[in-house]
Image (cartoon, rainbow, N blue to C red):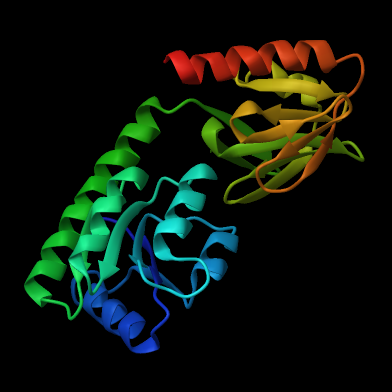
Length: 242
């Protein structure tokens, strides 16, 4: 029995294969939200989120394996199920934390087994995240929203509004960065009066700017440069040393 509407992405360069996967999914989870992608490029450029991803390994342009690495680097935690006609390709899957794989042509029994296990895993992960994952609550109008810190790329203030840029979309509301700064973890740094960045998504920096993994260029003020560098080096040291 389906406990909630899961969001499931299907990425394959063959329309017939995508439709076949969707049909099989709906036999078990008819109310699932299913998103189709015809290539790796459209998948990695998608700004929304999903729980489970069926991903073809062999595609022209951005391969499934390359797309998976890009998604993981950007913070995607979806459960990945690789789809392939050649079993040998799946050995690389461990590098991107893949959950399982299914072979073409599909064995329906195997497909259902893998999907049910993936769904059970996502339910477990979602329950754990809801309980343990660091988060903040922000009020937008009459609604209070819970935001997990790992999803926040950066925060900015513009025209008296705070904009929280997340991996799965933006949220904006009237407020001050100062009111949020103390509620964030040590992975967040105020690099300018108008910006707070999540060190997790910093790609590189210069004396006056920070480039994030989504390509956004953030101003780094002269007054904040020393503090930013110190905290960034401390952050990278934690990643290396555990």
